[in-house]
Length: 255
Image 1 (cartoon, helix red, strand yellow):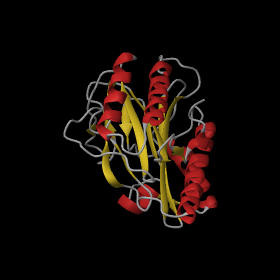
Image 2: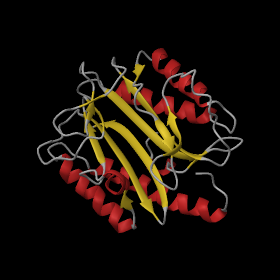
Image 3: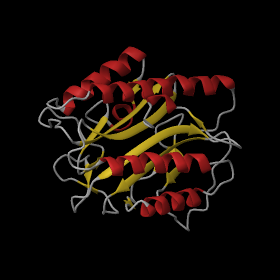
């Protein structure tokens, strides 16, 4: 969407704050020995208390309030009582929701407890690359150039990007134009960021793989075929002529 009034900006700020707060509190609540279903139900209670509705449930009938992906899972992980979190796991929580006709999307990966498997460099790279990408976004900047920047920064850090998962427009629905904000340079993508538009920008940074594949057993979860690990970070923001307004910045994924 493109913001045309203060009322629209306020609506986006409210849902973004709800999504960011839920993500922050879910991350703090996660503990070894807890199932991802218990963590998701906690997130559902938070969203409901805030007056927000789960976007993946509304849009796709997703079987969970949030997406929780663990270790080699890349995205869209289904919360499960059988999936128990362990010390050192690489965990990704993706929270998106609707309130008052406005939608926001926010995600972040983190290491649960001690970094037993050396995932932290990957998580730090994903976070820092998103920060760098957001700092370069302005009205008129080519989307392909931001994708190229993300790819270059990932390679500089010794990693790769997942090419078939992308950022997107957001605001009046979960996915809007621009439909694709990739993590790599796509010379065929001639679109530019537009001033006052609302977008969800994501970094999918991988240890080796460049593609995510759907697991056959649940129809939702995406994972790497070679066992690579992937860290994702995502913010919803408003494009301006200067530094973007990061609507979901309160989730403290920069920490």
